[in-house]
Image (cartoon, rainbow, N blue to C red; front, top):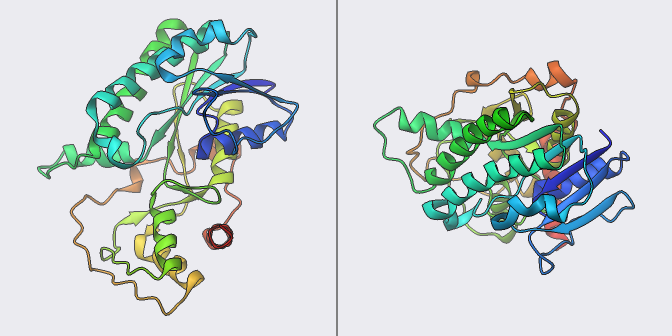
Length: 304
């Protein structure tokens, strides 16, 4: 790839992708909300150009970006991806529309490919909805991701832009500030706050942020049209396995209190995914082990 556009470029994953691409000589147009947005995560480079455009105005992006003929358009921008905003159905419905608007904007600026980052929570949501379990409010976010993926792909077919998606398992690493699982758990361990978990038998998977960025680079370069690639470590394990590593890296004496919380969700069946699909099509494979990734994250958290 020579030129790409990335919305949400100042976010946790978006900024990691910016850094991965510019160091490889790719010209990146980074799209952030406005001039008041925190762009401290975005690495400065001669290959980088920052433009300002909110999601509400994403359809106007072709008037903001003067250049044309990009190799890929990555759409990471999403309002309310964590916290209580996940249950705001009005906001999440808007995200679906913005995703479709982004596809059209990508086509208008001459992008060859549109890359949509999905979430493993989409599959958890679909699994819950296939049972009689009571869905949680956070499933509104997951359902919106499903709708955005399906609708954006359909719009892409209509306007003739190649579409490819990546299903993110659980990303963690240096720079994470939102209350995702690894970040929140390590902060509790480091602060001495009591932590309690389910029995930890449910299957999980994690991928370090720099590996996730490389995975998305691979998808943009060599991902096949209309495929949805799983982005993870390739080795899902019971959650208790990862919890013990996190605990031991901080202090082996910390009680995990496994079983202290009742698990009311549904255990995800990883046979739903083609775990090696991305490796087969692009030769991508994760480089950072969970142990090394946790050590890096702990060092960063302790230095804050």
